[in-house]
Length: 105
Image 1 (cartoon, rainbow, N blue to C red):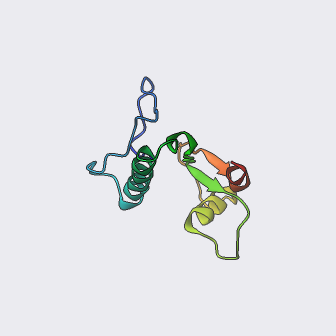
Image 2: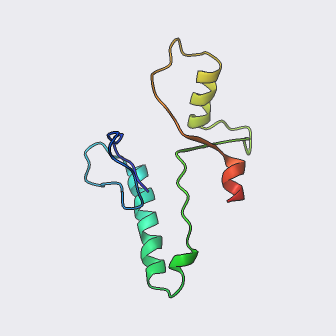
Image 3: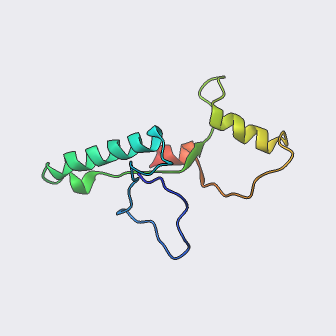
């Protein structure tokens, strides 16, 4: 799991990149995701053959059909952008994955 300021164009993010928990702008959520992933990698390192069976998928944002009628904060923000509730949209990019595609992995 990796969370950091956007990399410079010449820098490529690889499996060797990890969230730096000492970075002054990082919050508990990405640190917890990183700690959980590191823990599972440490676990499979100790079990013969397990390392080749572990797959980690870290999509940036997962959207899709709602499970119930409660709209999450992320979904609400997306909805407000798409319906024109904001007078302007900031210049940004997001990698959005459909939850059904993630489920097929």
